[in-house]
Image (tube, rainbow, N blue to C red):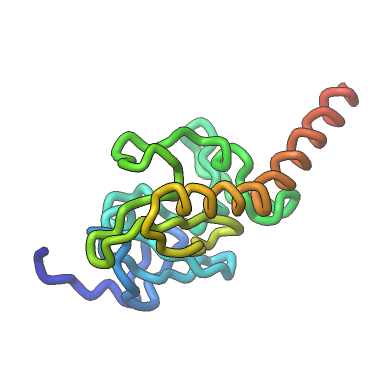
Length: 157
């Protein structure tokens, strides 16, 4: 891997890089402070490409940036919770990946603009179970609230 460039103090959209943190797989990551006050961990490639410009509080709408904190859903974008699995995913499950350095499966989940590691597991099925349990605990209530709110709004029209 090429030598890392120090990004500390640099601004990328609403994010200001505060420090270098542990890699996620083969990706160098940086802790960033968002203008909204949240802290987030972002791979260097996402910062430099412009793919990540906020902790998640910046929503794209028809090509125009709209600053919106998702207060109604605890700073969580319900549409991202339902997003499809990434094309480069090797486990077949969102939030479960193989860690070469430890030789274990790692389960993680993103919620309220932060990523939480759920554990490292010898068996992929244990990692998947941990991820599914966390989805039930964190995502399910948000998605239910979101769907209920959509029903109320459609009935008001």
